[in-house]
Amino acid sequence: EAQVTQNPRYLITVTGKKLTVTCSQNMNHEYMSWYRQDPGLGLRQIYYSMNVEVTDKGDVPEGYKVSRKEKRNFPLILESPSPNQTSLYFCASSLLNPWALHFGNGTRLTVT
Amino acid sequence: AQSVTQLGSHVSVSEGALVLLRCNYSSSVPPYLFWYVQYPNQGLQLLLKYTSAATLVKGINGFEAEFKKSETSFHLTKPSAHMSDAAEYFCAVSEGSSNTGKLIFGQGTTLQVKP
Image (tube, rainbow over all chains, first blue to last red; front, side):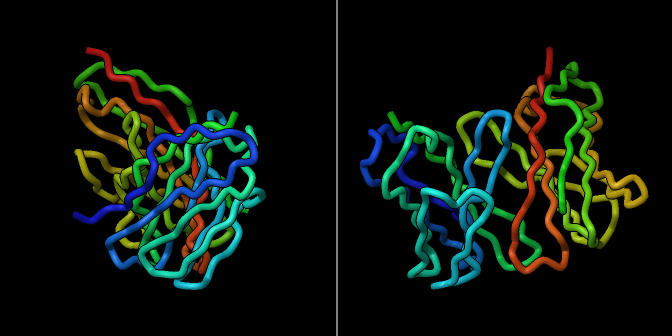
């Protein structure tokens, strides 16, 4: 089954404790992206990747890192999480153009 | 700069009634347009997309949308609402000529379907 898999689904952590949210897709998509969803703000892009070893900032990249060492994986790293990073995070992938994104089921992160 | 406006954060219809969710966009170049649906505790699922072919686009679950360039609109419709259509719906736009793949999402419209 074609899918984007994120783990974990739920995560509660404390300020400053490094964490990684994994994302994997099995559709051989070149493009992958991370979004965060917050009430009243909709979805905002954090980082994206056009292909292996090619990443770039989205609209809200501060406090996040990503890597794309393999085509199928695109982990999101929070080196020192803060409470304002409490959010619902989505990983998505697509072929290059026309950018019809396939989304994972989300990771709900709470930073206390 | 691109932007997307969804009119109405909440829309309520009766089962069997017409569903109309409004989306207006601004884009300096011919856009690609999308509608996504989000069910509780799930990710976004693509309903349909417009990529400069036919202006009337049919999607899954009986939904369709019409691209109207003169009105810069891409409203989503369904002739007869079903209880299972209750969800949040997002309109999104990307520049057709863009090489970044970035989608700009609207704020979302929650559809309530009453029995």
